[in-house]
Image (cartoon, rainbow, N blue to C red; front, side, top):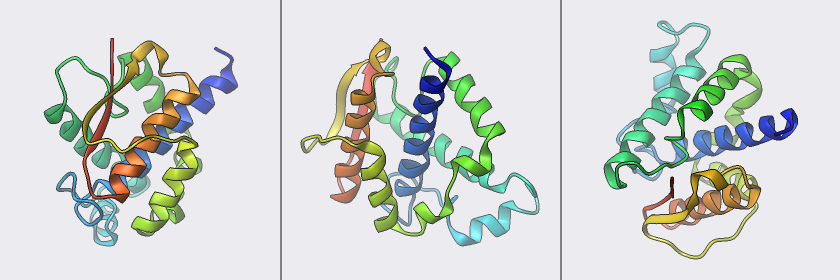
Length: 170
């Protein structure tokens, strides 16, 4: 894969994680019981993570989302919060290196702004879905259309107060 295609792929997954991670929190759609993106949490995190508080927020929300998905999906399935180890390592390195460029706090001001940003990142259409939704095989993840579909499923579910968990199989 060409380096710029790899970078675009990684950025899209990080954007999906960022937006869905925010939207799934307690004060938005209440999919998981965390509040990492609340105004008060940044004040709590900054003394401990003085230069990396936004990174701590992101990782906290991603871990909460990962647990929620893992509890509601079959063992061995993949989702945007649990990917093969080599992709997870590449994502981690990109987030560490480009923290400020990847996270725009203006996208997660409130639920409406985050849903709007999610619809732009998704670029796709999906029908109404509830519960676990098989979207394809993990080998197909790099296809832009599959990421679009995953984003669209989340966008519809999060805007209609339902749970839909797109997942992939080996």
